[in-house]
Amino acid sequence: MLEDLTGKLESTLRKLRGYGKLTEKNISESLKDIRRALLEADVNYKVVKDFIQAVQEKAIGEDVLKSVTPGQTIVKIVNDELIKLLGTSTTQLKTAGIPPSIIMVTGLQGSGKTTFCAKLAFFLQSRGRKPMLAALDVYRPAAIQQLRVLGESLKVPVYNEGIGDPVKIGFNAIGEARRMLADTVILDTAGRLHIDEQMMTELVNIKNRVRPHEILFVADGMTGQDAVNTAQEFANRLNYDGVVLTKMDGDARGGAALSIRAVTGKPIKFIGTGEKVDAIEQFHPDRLASRILGMGDVVSFVEKAQEAYDQDKAEKLEERLRRNEFTLEDFKDQLQQIKKMGSLESLLGMIPGMGNQLKNANVDPKAFSRTEAIINSMTRQERIQPNILNGNRRKRIANGSGTRVQDVNQLMKQYEQMKKMIKQLKGKSFKGLRGMPFNMA
Image (cartoon, rainbow, N blue to C red; front, side, top):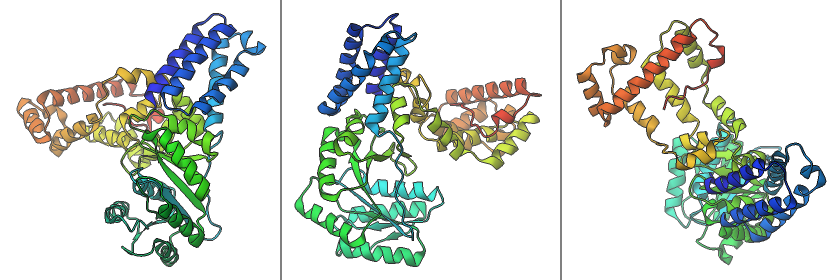
C-alpha cells in the first residue's frame, strides 16, 4: 500500500536524520523533496501546499534546530501533520438505538461498492453483529447476482426484489430485517459511470425515505484526484457520513487517501486491501501515517494475529512441542493461521523498516498455497512420519500437487530447520510461542 510514496519519503527523512546539524537551508531542500513526492502521488495541490507550510513552520523553530536529535524531531513533526491530514482519530460507524441500524452505501459504478457491502457484512459479522444485505441496484442484474453470491458465501441474508422502485425496495428491506431480527441493514445502491441528475435524485429519495443512520461513499483509490472530485460532489448532494477507499492494495499512488478528508471534511472509515471479503480494514489515521513513513504498523499486525489465533489448536501444539512431536500437520496448521492474517506483502508491510525493502523483494504470493498443496498431497502417515519420504514418494507428491521435486525438498528442509529450532527450545518455556504462527514460507 502506497509503496512508491513510502519509499520516497523514507529516503528524504533518512537524509534528514543523517545531518549532524539542521539548518533552514537543508530543511527547505528536504521539504521540496517531500512536496515533489506528494504531488507525484497525486495528492491535491492545495493540500500539499498547506501540509508543507505547516511542517515548515514547526520545523524551523528554535527548539527543533537546537534539538539533540533534530532529524528525529522532524520525522515526528511530519508524522503528526500526516495524522492531522488523515483525520486525527478513528471514526466509528453510527448505530441505531433500536435495531436495525441502516447503512446506505453509495458511489460510482466500478468503484467496488457491491464488494464493499459484502466486506462490511463480514466485518460486522466477525464482531458479533447480524447484518442483512439489500440489493437496490435494479439497473444491473449482474450487481444483484454478485451480491447474492457474496451473501451466500458469508451466510448473510440478501433482500432482493429484482426490478422495481429502489426507494420502495429499500423501505421493504428494513421491514424484512426487523422480521428476521437482523440488527444491521446494508443498502447497496445503484451507481453510474459518472455523476448524473437521475442517480443523485434517486439517492436523495432513498435517503429521505429510509433515513439511514450512516451513509458511506465508496471511492476507488486508484483514480486519484477524480475520486476526490467525485467525493466532493456526492458530499454536496448527500452530505454522507464517511468515505471508504477501495483497491488500496494495487498500484494506487495514494493521493485520494491523503486528499479526500482535507477536501471534503468527511472522515475515512474503511479501506479495502484486496478482493476477498476479509480484505477490509477500519481506518486508523495514526497507523496509516506510520506505514507511509516506513515505520510499520505493529498494532494492526498484532490484531490480525489475534483474529487468526485458535486457542484450542495453540494449546494442543504447545503440548506436542513439549514432547518434541512437531509434525507436518502442525506445519500446515501454522501456515493456515498465517493465511488468515492476509497476504504476505501486506503483513510484511506492517513490520517497521520492511516497506522500502519490499520494493525490490521477490515476494511470491502463492508460496503458502504451494506449500499447503504439497502437504495435502501426502498421506496421513507421511505427514506424521516425514522420515519415510524417499525419492519415489517425493516424486509422487510433486506430481500430485503440481509442483517440482525441488519444491518438496525445499519444504522438507524448512520443516527440518523448524524441528531443530524446537529441539533447541526443549526444556524452556513455550508460553511465549502459544498462538503465534511460525513464519515458515
